Length: 336
Ligand SMILES: Cc1ncc(COP(=O)(O)O)c(C=O)c1O
Image (cartoon, rainbow, N blue to C red; front, side):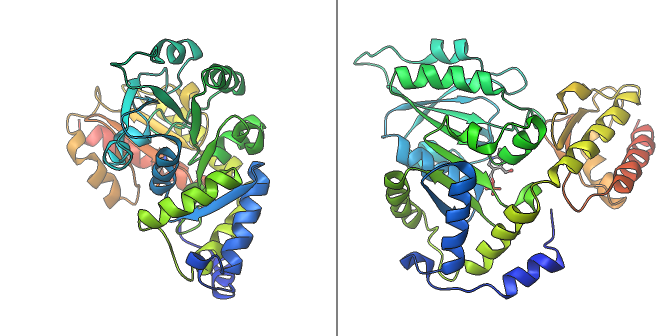
């Protein structure tokens, strides 16, 4: 939902470009070098979307007929059209997390015992922050324990870190430290960081070279992509500290929603920039809620029949949040 700022548009306009399919776009190369450095990995690759970043990683880390452990409400499960099964031939083993967070014990119990009948577990995917759980964060200790289990059994780890910098901002733990536990990390330059298009995968040199081929196979090879990379680079250089404001705004919204009788929300679950709330006991007409709010300039998306998501980003001010709270209070009493 973000719009590029004038300064970001300026960076786009001035970008030096070349053909990135041939590795000759200087701005893409600069972005990839920068992203690899801040994530502490040898190499990085620019891709059009977070979905493609996840799917290229899954394809790289698995073989058809194997199994990956993934949280049941993960983006990879809900919103990627079954791509891991369709494109990588992978069977997902779905585990339900507490607020989207899996425990090391759950994962250990779900790893297949080698058996001629069983699809071998070869990949564990974690999502940090977790979108459908409302932007919740994995503790670094949990990730580290999961990593120890995975490496003792030769299982790869992929991080869907679409909002990894939100986790880093909220905890003070560097994105690099989080990334050190995973073979591949995907993160988005769009969303909270404010670029119009683009995501990154970071990994080893060998994996990134193989994944360049998979990106081409998936139709993600781009030509003069430097105009997009310039926006991504601008986002990484300027917009990471701004995520703190988004977290403050989300907390303000969720604390206020908690005051409205009947709204189902636990503000302790609001850990970053996403607010998920349930209107089941106040609104008799949740079907109309998205449109009614949109007409008042407040955008929310629907998660289930009665739960909704509001996301903060760099175009939203504190006044906007206060306005949204007023609209929500009024609207929810009207739809009763
Ligand atoms: C956790 C998570 N992963 C991946 C994605 C996919 O990103 P994209 O929309 O760029 O494909 C999203 C998008 O909302 C997301 O929330």
